[in-house]
Image 1 (cartoon, each protein chain N blue to C red):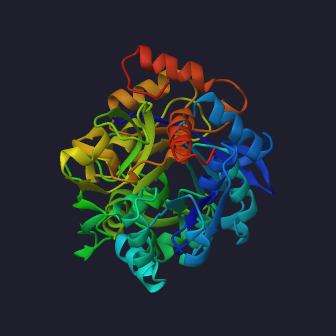
Image 2: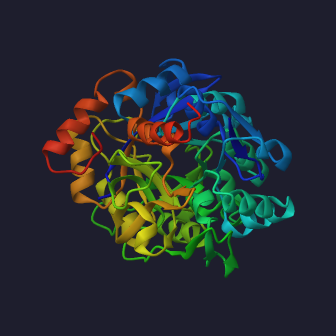
Amino acid sequence: MIGIIDYGMGNIFSLTGALKRLEADYIFSDSTEELAKCDALILPGVGAFTDAIANLRERKLDVFINDWASQQKPLLGICLGMQLLFTESCEYGQSTGLNLIPGSVIEIPDIVKVPHMGWNYITHKNKHPYLEQMEEGYVYFVHSFYAKTPEENIIASTQYGVEIPAIVGKGSVLGMQFHPEKSSETGKKILQELLKSWRVI
Amino acid sequence: MLTKRIIPCLDVKDNRVVKGQSFVNLRDAGEPIALAAFYDKEGADELVFLDISASLEKRKTMIEMVRQTAETISIPFTVGGGISSVEEIKDLLRAGADKVSVNSAAVKNPQLIEEAAKVFGSQCIVLAIDAKRISDDGQPARWEVFTHGGTKGTGMDLLDWVKEGVQLGAGEILLTSMDCDGHKQGFDLDLNQAVCDVINVPVIASGGAGKSEDFLEAFTKTKVDAGLAASIFHFGEIKIKDLKEYLKNKGVDVRC
């Protein structure tokens, strides 16, 4: 069972649609009791960093997620959910994140159009036990900030003015800057491999 | 390399997809969710749903259709048409829309862009603009912003409005040429390049595409990021797979 963390930050129907197509069971909940029973968690998210982290803290979900990760249980953050995994962000002023992966979320330099919006090609960098055969290909990005993190945490990356980490990972925690649930066949294959590694499908 | 996007637009009225010539003479082109799923398979990079009657009739866009679409397709989509409050934007994003486009309401109340971008992030706020050329031949090109489905002139200069919209937080511009829309004679290159020159967010060219060469021209002669069309896709005049293959062979980066 996958637990999708509900903290009031939009858009889960694409994700639940993708999980259904892969025949994975899930719940969508803000109850730490319910989420604690799951095999793996997904932290989705669309919106601004400061509101998102405030919403997590208000519901005491930040503490819960930190406990979860410290037990080496699997967690995937998607898009803003990925950015929340880092130490800090400079979106609308400095704010701290969950600090599960060391690094800062900073603005994409304006030598390219911002947001980074559309389909870009990701290549495999470091191996992660959950994504050993990671599918390379075009996936859908939509973001204005990106994660600056030590090389060893980058599982896949893409080029857009600078190197943009596309998949990051540390221990049992993974993050995807793109939307796998919106990335057609390539996204489906990446999610499928991950869910198989999690043993939820 | 970020690819150029091909975007079919589904103009929706009463839960049916329609497309008119220059905003009138509506013709029926099918059922929205089935058509969306078809385009996903065909290789469309993104979809836009415009509730074309909403702005005129003050009707809310269809949350249920958005939800079903989100569950069905695996590419992103934008929803627009008559959206005038942060609350409506929130409902649409929660129902599964990736982006929401604002048009008339943002002209009336530019703070809507700022508020929405602050709450949801710039990347999901698209500023849709209908522009009409007002300069005479031989004069420097100028365009006026129109609202309410292209029926009301605002007197506002296009480039001023584009700059203001982006400054307020719009993350993308959906730019429709009223002069070219429905005529299938190609995108308005001057218009699209003029807008790309004054801002640094993605621009979707809309209005005028009639054949594959029109997309190639827009992607090679201007800095637009995406090309949008409706009827030529709905009626099978251009197949998206063929269009992308053609663009790829011409050296344009596309996903195929």
